[in-house]
Length: 255
Image (cartoon, rainbow, N blue to C red; front, top):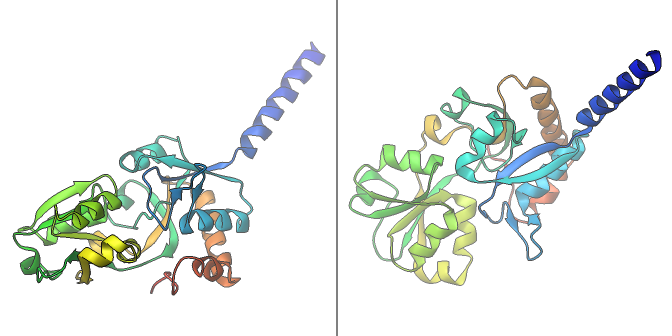
């Protein structure tokens, strides 16, 4: 009996140790969002945000597993325990903070409108009145457009790129998105041919948030501290800037 109890205890200890060693599942949006995250020809996820995930986890001495999850289900996947964190260009907003917590920010870029050339569109309620504006569904851009552009006709897409494709094809008049995503579109032949950046939208911190952070379950303070420590370290030791230079002309950390 003593031997049996000892065996059971050893097995339980081994299981507990294995559980502690499980990688942190970091959720990214399954929908491609270059240059932040997209699958390469071999199906491996690459991009600035993937590199930042790997750097933050290394700096925080965590083993992490990049885990693609459909954008619309990414917060339920976090709260339901299927993933442990979200690093998917998710803005820190008051609405989301009712459900989840966030780390310190790890980037912050403007929200911009790009439009078909020659339409005279401006990123204002008057400038978009009667125009068809494309936004990605379930994002701050959809929420902002509903609040600030009531006279525009909104068309939602599963990905930002789908909206850009419709814009290039003339099926919509304008798109609203993060400036980096729009910069990437405007660097393409299609973007250069069809469109022009008409400016940043007026700030609304309640909707647009205070930058992008790591989404975490409420009360998971230990994991938040690790992510904050990792973000702080890569900002201080130059890793953040070194990664950024591979993708952007200047730092996207923001103010």
